[in-house]
Image (cartoon, rainbow, N blue to C red; front, side):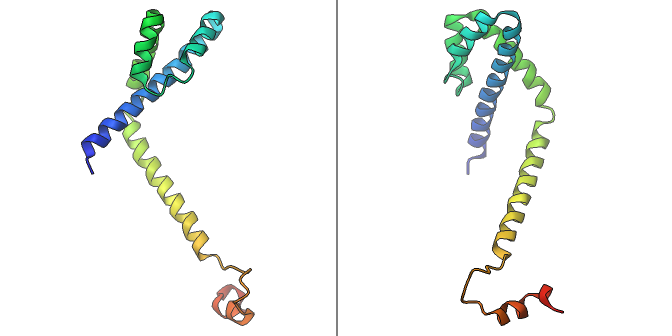
Length: 132
């Protein structure tokens, strides 16, 4: 396991996601101030934001002012979220793992009442909740 490569890949994915969020923000702003430009940007951006840096390069060729605007918004979002992101990711993964384990434990410990091979005596003797 190459932790440096995992960190690099994660950072690139996060960078592309922040580019996408910046695009959404700019689209919302343009939707209120310049709907035709918002429509152009929406159409231009379709299926291109998976790689944030490639998207920005392509946008620079078409409309440099929009590329600069998206980069500015992306940088602002990054500054705002990076302070608490590591703890949120750790906590989120821990909670999700615990929930997955709990659901798995519930699934594997449920008695299958549709199994005809279990006799009623076996079920009642192995299930303490059926005691009277």
